[in-house]
Length: 226
Image 1: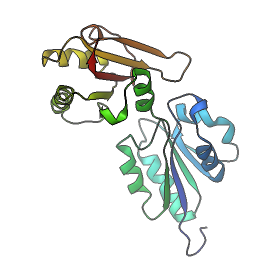
Image 2: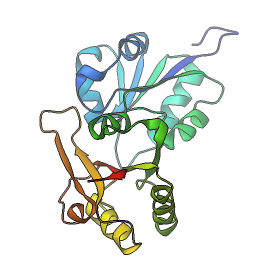
Image 3: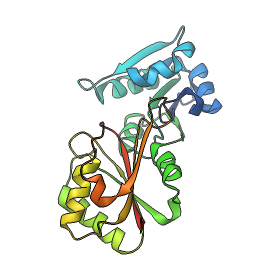
């Protein structure tokens, strides 16, 4: 039972792009302080050594976001410190707003993590200051997003795209070429960032349209040309 007059504690924490090397000490401490740990299997595997004696709640495609709401309910009613682990940086995903809503009435700390956006920018040698970010993960108007990408590139800014299996880098490249974006613009596509199997493609927009990539890759469409 939670102590009277004190809000229960929760953390929403990013574990980085995939390698345990990028999990911060602050995230590790949040896990140690928690009684309940929520996350997808691939995320939980990164912190397996810290999960002894914890109540682990696993997210999957069938129960998300219900499992987060259930964890928040337990945290709020029983006062059990809870951490929700996200891939990369929780601040990049639109799901952060939903999670904060689920934990209403709880003292929530958001712990940023190293995101694939940051790593892709590093691999491409571009600054976030001169770049814009767009995600093709969420539902919405794809034509509007493509229009926005085209307009952003025309203004001399880089665009970092979070992609999935329905909208791979090759498809985006083809759509941009149809919109008269210059074929010699540089494109950097990153897969499995920070992992041993990491792959980085560097080429032109024209070359990128024949690229085969795995889901959840990140593409940087650069303002510069090759």
